[in-house]
Amino acid sequence: MVNEIDVQKKNEDVVIDEAKTSLSDFWKLEDYWAIWIGLVILIVGLFIFIPNPPSNMKEDICKCNTTLKNEASKAPFRTIAWYKASKSKNKIIAANEPYAKKIKSIFNKPKSWNLNPFEAVYLGKEAAEAKNSITRADYEKISKDLEIAFDKAGVSENAAASADFKDNTLNDKAESDINSWLLLSNKLSKAKKKISNKPYNLIPSLIFLCIILMVLFGIGIFAMGNPIMPFTKGFIFVFSLAVIAYLIAGQHTNKSIGLGYPLWAIIIGMLISNTVGTPKWVVPAIQTEFYIKTGLVLLGAEVLFGKILNIGIPGIFVAWGVTPTVIVLSFWFGNKILKIQSKTLNITTSAALSVCGVSAAIATASACRAKKEELTLSIGLSLGFTAAMMVCMPAFIKAVGMDFILGGAWMGGTIDSTGAVAAAGEFLSDKAMYVSATIKMIQNVMIGVVAFFVAIYWCAKIECQPGQKVSPMEIWHRFPKFILGFAGTSILFSLIYGIVGSDVGSVVIEGGVISNLSKLLRGWMFCLAFISIGLATNFREFKQYLKGGKLLTLYIFGQSFNLLLTLLIAYLMFYIFFPGITANI
Image (tube, rainbow, N blue to C red; front, top):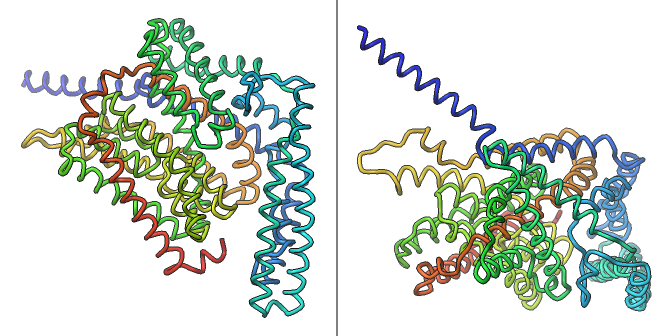
C-alpha cells in the first residue's frame, strides 16, 4: 500500500514537473520569444495606424468605388475613367501620411545607388539636384509620349462608345490603346521617382534601428538565460554586415538582375568565416533561427484570407494543389533515384523548391532537425534559382506571347521568393503582379502545413524504432512552435481586415502596418539571419553533400516538374474551368 502511494506521488510529481517545464517554455524557448517579439511589433503597428487613417478616407474611397462601379457596367473593357479611379483609390493609403513616412525613414533599408555607394546612406542637397537633372529630360520625354498616348486612347474609347461598344474591332483597339497609355503611365511614375530625390542622411536612423533590434532580441536572449553583453557587442557587428548586404543589393545592376540582399548577406558572411574566420566575440550574436523565426511571425500578418478569396478557387488550386505533389515527388526522387544519404537535406531542399524558398526551408529544417550546413545549401540553391527565374521567366512569357494573367499565376507558383515574385510580375503588368503576388501569398500558408506533416512523418517513420509508438507529445516537441505565431498573426490580421472591410484594410493594414513597419522589419530580420548563416558556415562542411552533383540534380528535377505542373494547372484553372474569375481580375 505504501509503495503504491509512493509510486502515485512520484507520478504526480512528474506531471507537476512537466507542467512547470511546459509553462516555463513560454519565456525560455526561442520559438515563443519569436512569437512575442513579432506580436509586440504588430500590435504597436495596429495602435499607431488604425486610429490615424488619412483624412476624408471613407468619402474618397466611396467616390472612387462609385466611379469604378459605373465604369465597369459601361463597357466590355476597363475604361480610362475606371483606371483613373483605380489609381486614385490606390493612393489612399496610410503610408502617405507624414507620421507614416517618419516611421518608414527609421526602419527603411539603404537607398539605391549607381556609382557612388555612399549615396545609399547619404545624399547632400547639391548631389540630389544633380541627380534629378540627369533624368529630367527622360521624364519630360515620357510625359509628352504619355499625352499623345492618352489622347489616342481617348479617341479610340470614344469611337467604341459611339458604336455602343458593340463593334469588337473598335473595342479591341480601344483596349489596346488604353493598355499602351497605362504602360507609359507606369513608366512615368518610375521616372518621377528619379527626379524627386531629396537630401537625406540615413546614418542616424540606421544607428537607432540597430539599437531597437538589439534591445528586442536582447530581451529574449536574456530571458532565455544567456548573457546580454556578449550578444550586444556581436550584434553591432552582425547588423553592420546586414547594412553592407543591403547596400550591395541596392546597386542598380544588382537590383535589376535580381541579386538581392539574401544572396549578398550569405556571401559576405561566408567570406569572413572562410578567410579570417568569424571572431569569437561575434558568435553570441549569430542567432540565425531566432531572427528568421521572428521574421516569419511577421510574414504571417501578410497572409490575408480576404486576399486569398479574392482570386478564388483557381489560385488555391495552383498554390495548394501543386505544392504537395512537388514536395512528395521531389523527396521520393532524391531518396529512391538519387539515393541522397541525408533525408533531412532531401526534404529541406524539396520544401524550398516547392513552397517559398527560404521561409519553407527554415520551417522544414526545424521540423526535421536538419544540420545548419544542410539548411545553408538548400537556401543557397533556392536563392540562385530565384534570381535566374525572376529575370528569365518574364522574358520567356513575353517572347512566346503568353497571356500575362497565366504568366503571373505561373510565376507565383514557382518563383521561390515573395519579393522576387512581385518584381517579376511587375515586369509584365499590374494584373500579372497582382495574380503572382496573391498566389505566392496563398502558397505561403503551406509553410505551417508542410512543417506540421514533416514533424509527424519524421517522428512516425524516419526516426521511429521498430515496434515503437509515437505519442502526440513527441510530435508536439518536434513541431516548430513559431509556426503557431505565423498562423496566429495570419488569422488575427485576416479577422481585423474583415472587420474594418477590404477598402479600409487596404489603407491602414496593408498600406500602413504591413508596408511601413512589419515588412521593413521582416526584411532586416531575414538579412540578419542570412548574415548569421554565412558567418556560421565553413566550405569544408559542404564537400560531403556536393559529391556527384546529386543536390543540384534534385533541385533541377523538382523545379522543372514544378514549372510544368504549375503551368498546366494554372491554364486549366484560369482558362478552362473558371474563365469568369479570370475575366474579372
